[in-house]
Image (cartoon, rainbow, N blue to C red; front, side, top):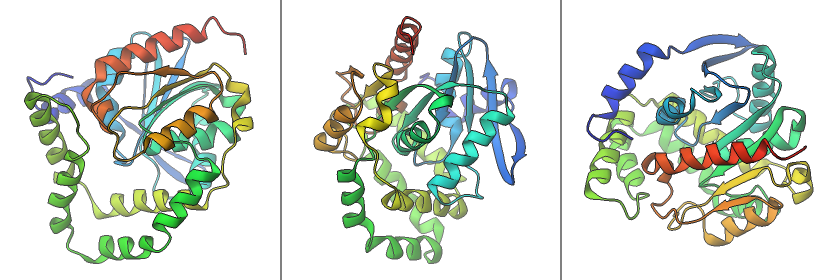
Length: 293
């Protein structure tokens, strides 16, 4: 993470050499980036912001060693099973036979749903700042959001969106923990840039996908037995989005997972401690090379 330049400047430079492409796959419009070199493919699944360019620093750090795919979730699907099925179609369209799924926050949920349904396409999981989709979690989501969801959607559809953006920036900043003043300023600039052009349409799309999580069939540890030893978990301390109990639930779900400790900058640590995450992904991938499926 280069904090000497604004995120907007870095992204503008990045997109000059990493142009996104657009493709329609079985009726779904994908805005995607496929780049890099290597025998292993990393598939980066975006979190609740819904913006795949946020993986920019990971791509620039890893593309010399890995083939990398990332994409925005297509608007055609507001349900998670439809989204997961569509992602499998995208991989087949791009001739990607198998990959390591990298998912942060909501992207971690997508990774689990995909890995459960498409083991033949899944070589491993890197799950960051997320929780399991266990029966306990799904039940808690229902209890917490079943009544609130209609109110939240009404607000997103009817309140002037310009009023909501400053609230969202402040909400995001509360997720940053134990950061330096320099890091705080950089992240604040990042979120202001994001929400400058963020749209109501995108917000509603991602919110509907998040709400739909409470409708999912819970995962079990048996769903991931085939990935024994092939899961990397980085679950930060001070994560306001996922409690220690939820994190423990994910650890119990994933047999013999590689667990990285010592990350304490909260839920958005993936934006702050990029170098640490990149090194752990690299080390994990090298470890998988020595494990037989």
